[in-house]
Length: 568
View (tube, rainbow, N blue to C red):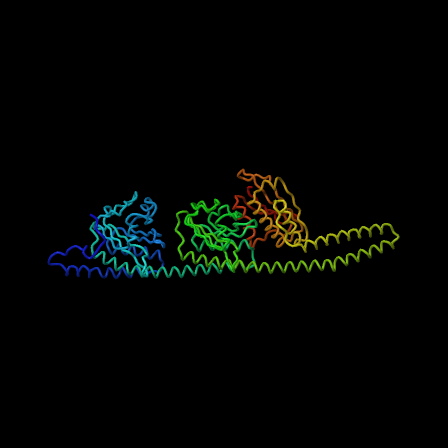
């Protein structure tokens, strides 16, 4: 029959004539072993290795074949972790999923953390049996582990090597070891929490540096996603910013296998988007099964943290860190640290936006000054020159001279009109973004013409407005903007040709759209930063497309041709 939870009366009666002397000799003989075990338990600071060491030490101390520690979840419902000793890797693989503590004897010990000693484990009414491939176990000893007055978990021992039962000596020794183990676990948790805070602080510094460095904004947001993924131990790190049409748009993804998510918009009617835009954090226990997830993005995820990037009362976006389905839930400490990281990232976003606003204002002021100079100085001088030429034309008696001067005056008139057009363009504010792909491409070309000093040529092939979907269109416009910016800043080109072809067939047979931006500049240097080109490739790859470089349109292939393509 199974034994009840242990009490002082459970110890076997000593034999006549031996009694206390035998007890004392047995206890004295095991004290050095206990002291050695206590030293071993307290010799490290890393939490997982400490738990493994406790299992090994307890098994050795009690002469047990198997040992395990079940770490109770923060909410007290089941086990958050399960560390075992004595079961080899192949057997553990065959057994499969580790105990979750929701049923059986392990679950009972969570809700009633008292020492338990059993002679026949399988006969206990709380036992629910073993899974297939599990090694047989009969004798059992369970002792709670307390850390700073709170239940951390339970230490389980099973099957003595000599086939006997766990006695009072085993129970007493393991109880003493459990006290030392609680101290060691507490120290390890404090150490791990300190290291974890240090890592999050370092990550915040990296994010702030990236956002305020004045570099590529997309690259900086990618740093935010990568740091969030690494620090939270998540499958992915995702950054979302408010979309023009409402809701939240995914602008950066960091993952081993990034999903096709860049440019995906969580619509404004989504409950999740609404809560995040209102500045409230959202924590999902199982995203794949949560009815609030309205996109396929979360179908493979389990626990998810969704944190608003909020600073000074304004929401700049959101940070999402998902784990695989069935993965470990986020602890309270992880949630707190991630929320602090998100606040720091939001503050850096605010400062970076203010910095960009100052730079944009400086550009507008410079454009306004250039426009005034063109109007007040250049046009006036050209106009005066034209009047002088007209006067000379009237005084000349030579027909060829009169014709030549007249042609020069006409050219000056055309030049004045072109300068006036440039002045109007310089004085225009940012216009509303057109809806069609053709209109958006033309807008980007017109905007690029001002810093370039000339208008790139353009050509459209196929149904660019009707065939290309919104997600591909948004990414294509971002790629065009990046390619034109690179040509202006680095190429030194005198000619740029833009082609948008919606008639191409990709290598896998799918219909797609191809963007080509070719220039006759200096080409791509062998060394230097290539973050913009990496962004192009990443955007195309997220859609199932690709991006590459080729020779330009200058003499002997001088310059660069950027090709970007993706399925509709």
